[in-house]
Image (cartoon, rainbow, N blue to C red):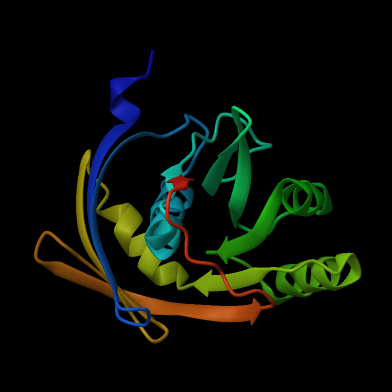
Length: 194
């Protein structure tokens, strides 16, 4: 049974002006006890970035699972179409994500130059097809500081600007593409899991 202090109702209105995608989502989420507010907020932002592909918000109870995923149902088993990882993944996670999914997305919310260089080296050495983005840490921290049990966000992605309007406040920051080696497909019947 979930601890009610970690259960959230999220109402997300997503406007991706880059791809002309608009959607509203209601999610009932629980945050793992070890998950920080900034990691949780980054997962929600990750969902909003790939929700046009019918995303699903995964529990973080299992460290071997993606933070956000697009699933296919094949022969009564789920197969990951898109695997979104929050933070800089280690080599084990990179290999697992590439083995179990067609597309691998990394959303980084905090890193130093050394960490980014190490991740870049790992990805180049593995010849991994990946899309990696850096979301402004100040934006993530502002959203985490105002996190409530009822999350009501209007999220707009315009170019590399990511804006979140919540409770009469607008928080903005950049969503920078670090590198993109794959074009994410458009999905029809799959579900994205967050």
